[in-house]
Image 1 (cartoon, one colour):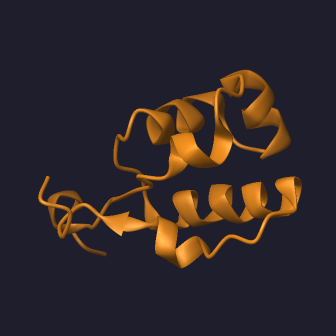
Image 2: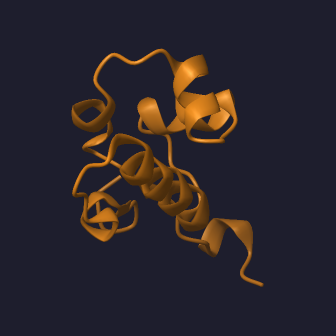
Length: 81
């Protein structure tokens, strides 16, 4: 396993556009995720790829929207952070 500092973390720049002003608690229940995770994603704090991918996939399913999950995920190493 890679050391923590070498691992890649990811953000979703389009998050606000996708969820609007939805309540984080309600959104967390709907997406079957922890409110803390939703808060991290909303504030552009990097999270693990699997976490972000899972939340975006659940969002796509719950809102019945056409969303290319991969195009919404940005690696923080390449985002200039």
